[in-house]
Length: 206
Image (tube, rainbow, N blue to C red; front, top):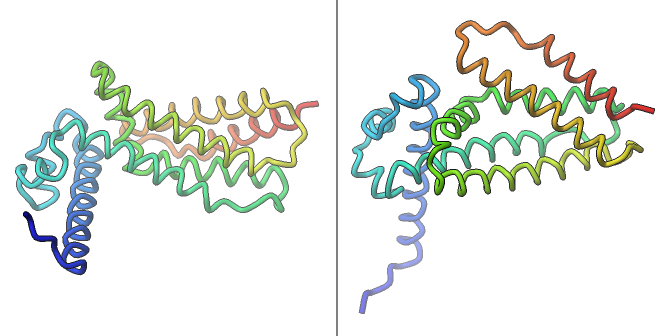
């Protein structure tokens, strides 16, 4: 029979494990953001984290699991930004600007850009894609709930909300990929302003 650990010892072990996992995830995000997906093998991630590859494998098992958790961390951080948006008391145009701005801040974060690189690079791995796309779909549902809560008072058909969301995410995906691929990308402020105007036009269409 294995003796159980005292609660305070077990709790300390869990905290250390969570801290280690967070350190590895942050290192993987930094490595992918700085060096690209192809260069970000376990050895380089380990160097970024200041630990051994064996320690990473002990925590995550394999690189695919680590990469899946990077994606989850990236999109959770993106959605978390949206939960802090102002409520429905602001004029609709200001709410659109706030939402578009918060989403772009999330997309432009290294954690989200790393997530997008991973999704593109791992698209041929069916098992990985099933896990990650299921998670992304769940995040999309959370974003949709936040969206509908933000624009609860706008009297327009559900289909127009879907159309506006599609405009937002197709534009931001494109800008995020440009940020990854194009050195010295121009300031996207004008693109974001046009996007906000487009969303507002869809939502307020007669």
